[in-house]
Length: 303
Ligand SMILES: Cc1ncc(C[n+]2csc(CCOP(=O)(O)OP(=O)(O)O)c2C)c(N)n1
Ligand code: SF4
Ligand SMILES: [Mg+2]
Image (cartoon, rainbow, N blue to C red; front, top):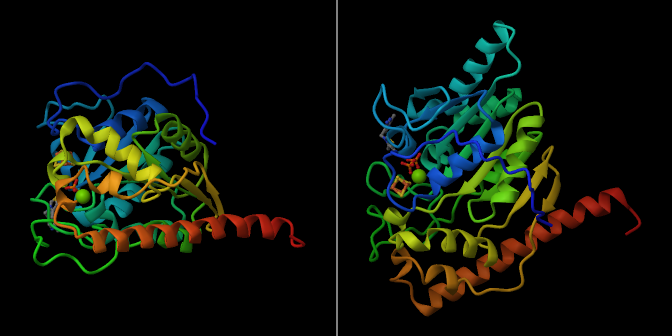
């Protein structure tokens, strides 16, 4: 269960004056992440909305060092920064790779896979807004099927399902992988703390609300993030060493319509298509419950 952590710090490592759209989930995510990690962090940023958000050099909305790197190199660049710090005898600085879904699920997957296979010691956050937002809302392999984007318009929607990045990371047997949401700050905070305290490659997958790309009113950004969890579209869970699953919140049934209905990117969906999405969500939820149950069975073989 999610518990309230009273130690949520008041220090801010992200300032006002950033360049994100109003209601951007990715900015709230960075603010929470840095609160959990503290000031001794180097952020490694492959091309994405977050390349723009801090502002143009010499200005920056972050109070921690920031390294802009090529789109496909989040995993390898962060590994290089970590290796450089080790050469200097610095084991205290946390390296945080911070990439979008395009930079993680698609073009950066090879670099991330290499870092995961080597178990390089850094935190990799994917803030997943389910499209290439910075370049104009193009579909990525994180875009859910049937979603409107500029390259998958309503009359020609995406057929393919969203890639399951958490299972890909589990297959690498990384020490720690977790999903997180800006609508559940305590859970988010605890997971970032746990990632910081764990050695090796840590992967945090955040569903990052994007009012611009999701055709979502800005004031409903956190509501949409919360409904993604409550409808079980984006469950909160952790995977340790690739095979120990913990579901952090098990919500009662809530129709996916509550989530889909808020967003213009789903406004073209027929009732039948929405029922199909509901069915897929339920199947994936059952599958996740079985995975968690298999931990218990492994611990108690007689159950
Ligand atoms: C090799 C290369 N191809 C394309 C681009 C152009 N580009 C910059 S950001 C971006 C989209 C990034 O999408 P995502 O990683 O999902 O982050 P978001 O913009 O959604 O925050 C693209 C295509 C680039 N910088 N480098
Ligand atoms: S396009 Fe979306 S992800 Fe990018 S800054 Fe705007 S709200 Fe944030
Ligand atoms: Mg994106």
